[in-house]
Image 1 (cartoon, rainbow, N blue to C red):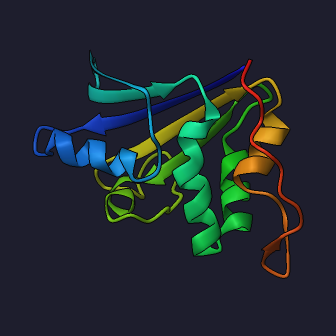
Image 2: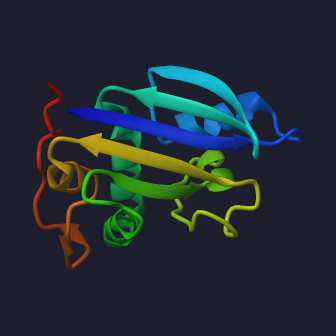
Length: 145
């Protein structure tokens, strides 16, 4: 099973369209919704397929940041999901920059959560291990049932 959820804070001073554009520069979600919570407003985007992260996958290869990406994708993950954070302003500019959940992205980080029946394969598809800066192998996108 594959599922991707993206959660990004939307501050009163921000343009919602620009925040959506930041997300769309790294992902292609199928659904969008706005939620109001005690700690603010958030845009939630989701997809039932890992293919929505194809833009992220390609940018990581173009930027040659696979090892750093793999490390950051594993850093906050659990056995049943990949969890990572992207710098919102960098994403708006078209770049993938990983960050900590708080403090490194002044307008809040973009949180990405990936659930899949085979998380290792999903990680290998997004950011395979490298040797001399090149992927040691490539895998096909994990199947979504």
